[in-house]
Image (cartoon, rainbow, N blue to C red; front, side, top):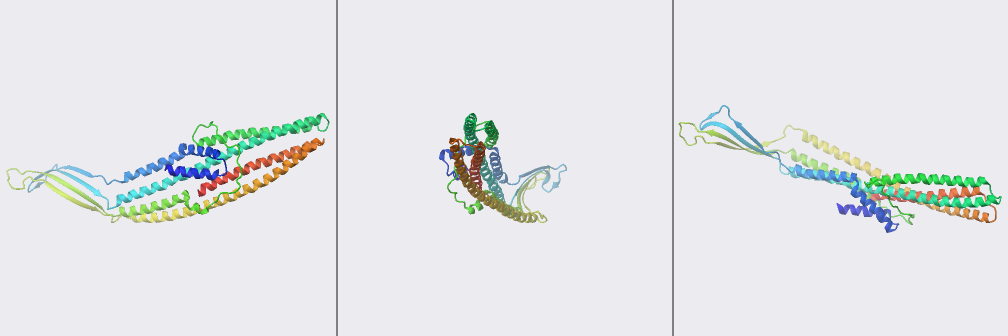
Length: 411
C-alpha cells in the first residue's frame, strides 16, 4: 500500500509542477505527504478496508457443534435394561467449497473498498493542490497591490510638485490618495482571505489552523502543456471500483450456488442402559452407541433463486452506474482541457495588454518631463495595469488548477 501511495503522489505533484523549480514542487509534495498521513477521511477509509478484510476470518468457520444431554424421568425398559440418560453430539458441514466461496466473496468486497482509499487520496491531493494555488494567487495579488500602491505614492509626489508650480490641482492629489486607499482596502481583504484559505489547507492536513503555509513566490505559465492521454480515464479508480463491485456480485452468486447445496451432518448418540437385576445374559446393561448422518436439503426454499435474480439485476445496475460515471468523468476532463486552453489564451492577451499599458505609462512620464501630465490619464492607465496584472495571476492559477483536475482524472 505504501508503494502505491508514494507513486501516485509523486506523479501527481510532478505533473502539477513539471515546469516549476524542484524546491517549489517539493514544498507542495511535502504538504500532500502530510495530508495523506494525517487526513481523518483517509484514515476512515483505511479502517473500513481493514474491517472488511478482517471478515475473512469471520466467515472461515463451520456451524456450531451441537451437544445435548437428556435424562429419562420415566426410564423405558428394553431387553437389555432400562435407559437412564442420553448424550448426543452433532456437527453440520457446508457443501464442499462453500467456505472458500465465502472467503472469496469477502475478499472481493475488500478489493472494492480499497478503491475508496485510492479515490479519497486522489481527491485529497487535488484539494491540497488547489488550495495551495489559491494561496499562491492571493499572495501574488497582494504583492502586485503593494507595488501599485508604491507606484501611486510616486505619482502623488509628482502631483504635489505639479500643484506647487500650478500645473495640477489638489483634486488630482486627492484622487491619487483615494485610489491608494482602495488598493489598501483590497489588499487587507485579500490578507483575510489568505488566512481563511490557510485554515482550509491546514484542516485538509489535519493540523492546527494557525500554522503558516509557505507558498511559491511566482509561477510561470508553462511553454507547453503536458500530454493528456484520455485512454487512461478508463483506468480511473472511480471506474475500477465498479469493476470490483461487479466482480463481488459474481462471487456473491458463486456463494449463493454453494449455499443452495445440501448440508451434511455427522452425529453420535450415547444412551446409558442399566443392568437388569437377577438376570444373567450376554448384553445385560450394555450401553447404546448410535452414529448418525444427516442431510439438510433446501427443497422448498425459493430464496436462493430470488438471490440469483437480485444478483443479475445488481450487475445490470452497476454496469449502468459505471457508464453514467464514465460519461461524467469524460465531461469533466473535456471541460478541464478546454478551460486550461482558455487560461493560456487569457494569459497571452493580458500579457499583450500589460505591455501596451506600460508603454502608455512611459509616454505619460515623458509628458511630465515636458511639463504636461494629466493625472486622470495616470489613474486610468494604472487601473488598467492593475487589472491586467491581476488577470494574469488568475490565468496562471486557473491553468494549474485545471491541470490538477486533469491529473486527478488521468494519472
